[in-house]
Image (cartoon, rainbow, N blue to C red; front, side, top):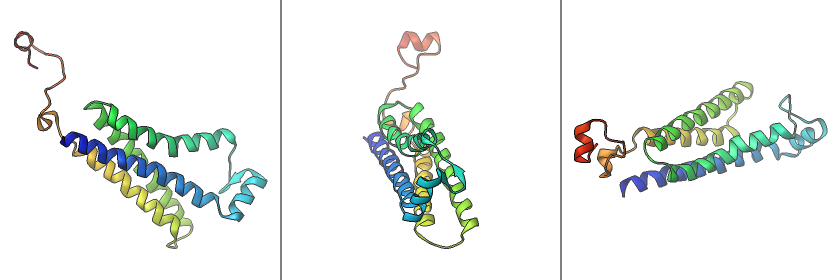
Length: 158
């Protein structure tokens, strides 16, 4: 039962991260001057953004965390733990970079950096949960690895 609780916690954090990323994208794009400038020029923060780039951003920033919420519940150990740790680190580094970039340009406390800091904390919590994930021996689940020696194969244990 403990493993299911861990999986549900991490899955919930991925959902929080995906919805938070979508909210952050809307918070940045929806102010009228930003949206009108993007629609008129096709540029956002000085970079040209076309439909393919926009689809990539939505896919990476919104759909990937939501897919990880499902994958967290579907995969077995240790793949689940490694996938959560690696993608959690990627998300945390990405949002930390974004926060550092925006704070260096405009060092004011507003909704954007606070939202980004919340997403960084969610990413760190995912990494922490992946690191502290219960091992197979702690889960009261038999080891799923194939038997490695002839004695283990004969006994039916790993």
